[in-house]
Image (cartoon, rainbow, N blue to C red; front, side, top):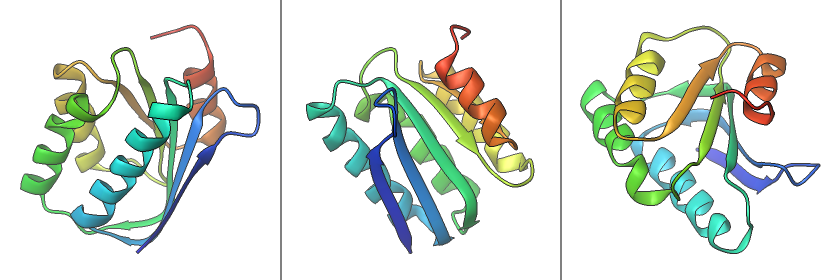
Length: 122
């Protein structure tokens, strides 16, 4: 279980990188670290890199995690997630989070994820 949370190189976003097994406990720890950083770092853009992560959470755990994102992040936060291949679970998380007011999108390309995150589109 390994993750890092740091400001992006240009200060326009916060970057989270997960590597290895990623269970619910790691997802929650990463979310808590981001929420803490957002209290002192004035940024509402979040880039999550899951390219080297191995998801281990169940669908029930993913539902509870995604449905509570809006409780931990400020209003109008924009979240891009990049992963190596599309996952059914990713679309599920995206739908649950969006239905609760969190603007999140999943991508398989870092370039596409950054373009959406840093661009003006929703």
